[in-house]
Amino acid sequence: MSKPSQAPVGVILAVDPDRFAEVVEALRGAGLTVTGEQPMLGTLSGTVAEDRIPALEAVAGVEAVDLDRTIHLPPPDSPIQ
Image 1: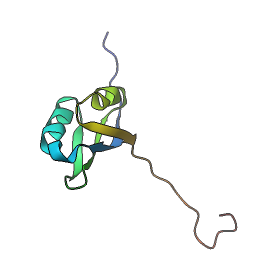
Image 2 (image 1 turned 30 degrees about the vertical axis):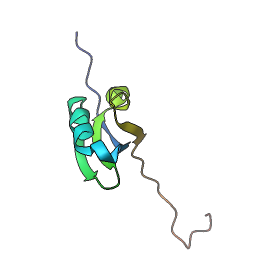
Image 3 (image 1 turned 90 degrees about the horizontal axis):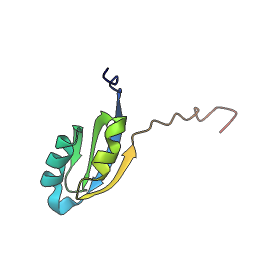
Image 4 (image 1 turned 180 degrees about the horizontal axis):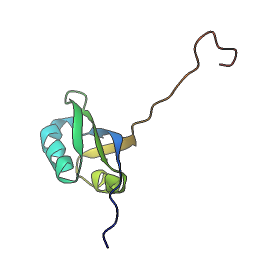
């Protein structure tokens, strides 16, 4: 019986900007669906099955992998800040 696939999670990655294109291709091969690229900054965003995050971290040239998180703040006139 096969394991059910996980819903993709958003990730933000910092990679070696001098090898950006090469690293991005390796990340795609490791399962990343790229949704945004900032080559001059050496960052990109994408989605991947959560169990594939260790494979992304293992790609040569990857400096950091962080989950993309949304933070909701109360309105400025809210009594609790």
